[in-house]
Amino acid sequence: METIEITGRSDFALWAIQRAQEIVTAEGAAFAVAARDMNDEELAQTAAALGKAISDAMLEVFDGLTAE
Image (cartoon, rainbow, N blue to C red; front, side, top):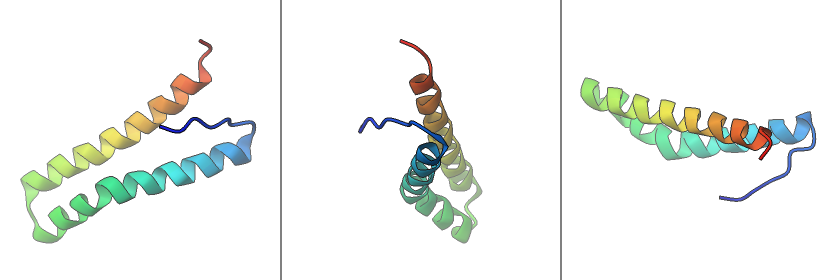
């Protein structure tokens, strides 16, 4: 994973947009297919994966903000 330095609000906004795009690209397609197919079990699994990816991204930011 690439490390970036966030020095201000605009840097954070850019990072958040890029990270959201990565998450939607990686997890969103499976979610859309499950929704289209009306497969409740697969929909639940893909929604959980999407939520986990979002949570992981937020923890990634938090870990970067804490002093080592």
